[in-house]
Image 1 (spheres, rainbow, N blue to C red):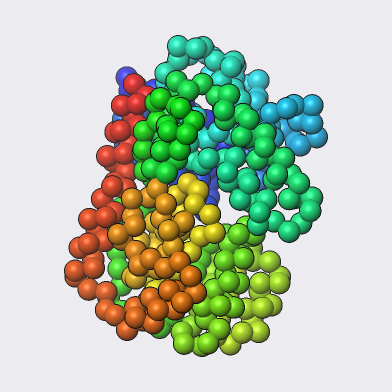
Image 2: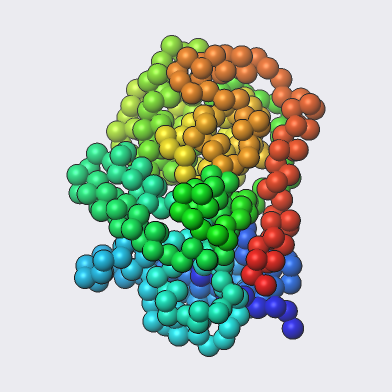
Length: 372
């Protein structure tokens, strides 16, 4: 009989359309490929999400409701944690002693209710306290800003109280360094992000535009898109295409009024792949260093030249795989040079060498070793 494990996920993993669930979705498939029998548990709270496509890779799949904010008002825990403490989940996990992979700080509220000697690995997606502080910094809506600030403070206190003896698989080397050296955690290893892109694929031709893509409903991403349009591309030297999910109306109207910019709302997965592959330059600036930017990996596996800043590549091990730029002048300079530069055999070989550390089969074996 195959070794059996539980995976507890903070959200429904399908569709795999944003960073955290991309990692989870690809990881389930990679662990199943090792012969592991997987019991998947996840929280269902967003319409249109589920587990489609993962049925062949799991022995059992369970969904649980997430508590509302009102239901958690009496708790001093961060809402992302208290809302995922579910008695049915805890009861089901306690039916056996199989090793358990806990996805994110979000799901750690159940740990006090489990056997202390159980083999357990925490998949650390982010320094959540720092991430929520970044969200607060980017959010202009006063109600949401207050929520993010409160959550950041609670997460800071909560993360400090978690056991320093937990086995932790950090998604980025930056998180590994922070939680080991700053927080004093003893069992943190870097296990790079799992992705659906394993073979780098590049088109033999490009079109003369630069692409920025991301979830545009996130304030930081919409701010970045505006920064690019208003500062880097304002002189018309190159054309900017912005693509992503649910862009705010203000961003859409601003882009549509700018003849040097094109905005594409809610592109299909196939269309986004085309946009990434055809762009002469993919742009991956980030306002804050947190986790690993899946948009960076997507651009490197499917795109030609990539220009990014230090925040975007922090902890990824991919600093040498991109062209670095930190300010408007540097972005303009890099784009101006790269719009005319071929992407040939030498660049393809170097890219493949840097991306080798994101081999899902190798990283799945590393994770399985931690679990068993």
